[in-house]
Image 1 (cartoon, helix red, strand yellow):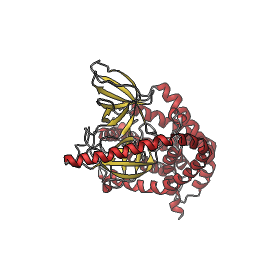
Image 2 (cartoon, each protein chain N blue to C red; image 1 turned 135 degrees about the vertical axis):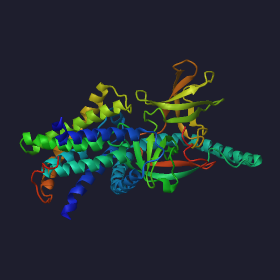
Image 3 (cartoon, each protein chain N blue to C red; image 1 turned 90 degrees about the horizontal axis):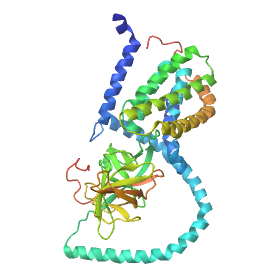
Image 4 (tube, one colour; image 1 turned 60 degrees about the vertical axis):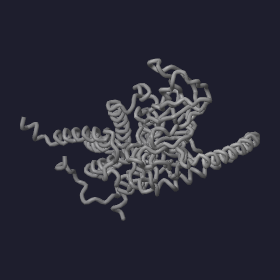
Length: 289
Length: 177
């Protein structure tokens, strides 16, 4: 046996495997915050990434623009055709918004679950081993970002939520991550709103799964799915996607729907982190659903 | 200035992985086939062979840790394998003849080893439920393809750069491990 203990390499290997298992176990724990060395490394690396990333994005953006110009004529034709539709819609929206405001004043109800402060952020890194879809942005705790906040694209479609924050960066878990804990309270817009929870992502259909919809709710294809704002830190009324297909749940007590997300999860350069105005922060760490 | 060349080179490849994934044209092809750039790993293999084993293991350890903390948020996975790959490479180089082609081949072997290892660990901790066949055809083969192209482009200039790195002694450091 003494010879076994004299073999230095074997000891080092065994110790490092134990260390590895311990570290993995530690990081899989449902952590509220990152430890300070991690936060420090994230901030420093984030800064370096930012320096390299910006010029690269700029150059790529230029080529993309050139590519876009080629299709401009065709697109312009289609868009012109839809312009009238848009003008009518916009007039309607404005009128409704005004009326809403007036009614609110009438009721003396100033706050709403819908209001949020947008925090603009740029993507500085993306997980290269694409086992988990994680992106890193350049805004963090100092800018008011906290764990669990909703992240949307500039066109206001939901893409994910904040997983961890450090003082100057935040890690965003995209909705396409196959994480059961990634639940979002949502509803299907219709004559009567049907509420449910977004739980997980179907890789094959490329669709989110909206579960726990009441069995008697009337849902049709193409109806829009929005966040309900009932779960915690998410504001109300962020667009998620539209219903693709409805079917009974595994147990047959409730129904589930496949929701096609509006946001393109892969093509993301800039994001907006939505910091809800109402009741925020009531209690830190309560944000999780 | 010359002393900073090696860290700068490794940082460059570390950052380039994320940039490549970010700037990759995002179409259906991207969603179906997963090309994982493993430029950092390839660089570490080259550092092990053309600088010293000690440098290889240390760089593997440090940048593996950065990779874990910054990108994946599961600590330990890459830190362990990058250092181990550096060690195994140095062992392998005792058997093989020292040549750019051999080193390139070894780095591709290292890439596939890391892919299998990470797949195994993620399967174990339940982070993925990808079937083995999907892993093989949609992930491993495209990854090997991408990294082979990278190695072909970069191996010779990288070797030339690494040979210039000034270190105190290039002799065997068997007292460390």
